[in-house]
Length: 284
View (cartoon, rainbow, N blue to C red):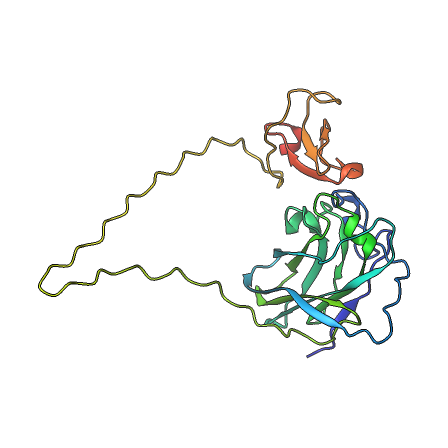
C-alpha cells in the first residue's frame, strides 16, 4: 500500500488547493480554524486517542460522495492558542484505481456538491491521489468558537473522483496529551442493529393460541406540494414578505435574508447561502 498522504493544518488564510472552494460560505460565525503556534503540551503528558466516528461506506458512484458528521470535544475561548487536541481523518477504500478526496468543513455545509463547487468553506482535507487518504490538523481553543451556534460540530465529505465506484471505511480520531498515532484504519465499523423479533403467542395446553392483533397502519400525512428547486439548496420556510433589503430571495447561514438575484457570491460575508425562496431567482 502507498504511503499515507497527509495534508498539514491550514492557516487562517485561503487554502491553496481549495482556493476555488473558499469563495463560498463560512461556518456560522465565519472564520477558518487558525493555526498560530499552539501552547506546548506539558512534559510527561500521556496521549489519549478517542474515535469520534468509524463509518463504512459502499458503492459511492463516480463524482459523488457521502458526509460524516462528528463533534470536536472540549470548549473554546476566542483568540486562545491553547492546544485542545489533534484531529486525524483517515479514509481507505478497496478500489485502487479510483481517486478519493477528503473535504473537512463545518456542519452546515449542505452537500458534497456544494463543498466541491464553491458552496462551502473548506477547513482542510486531502486531495492527493494515493491511498489511504489522511488529513491531520491541530485543534486550538479558538477553533471551537468559529461557529457559535454549534461550536464543535464538524463534517467531512468522502468524495469519489472515479473512475470506479468505491467502498471502504472512514475513521475520525481525536488525540489529547500528545501526537496522534500514525497508520491507517484501526477501527471496525459496526452495522446498525436490526429490528427486534416479533413476539409470538405461547399456546396454553388444551387451549387454542390467541392470535396477535393485526396492527392498523397509521395513515401518512399528505405532503404539501413543493415548488421545483433545481438549485441544490433546500427551500426556505417561514420567510417574511419583506426584509431590510426588500423581498427576500434566500436566507444566509447567519440568519440574515438576501435579496440577490443570482447565487454567485450570495451570502459570502454572512456564512454562505443556507436556503433559497421558491419560486424565485435563486431556485433556478
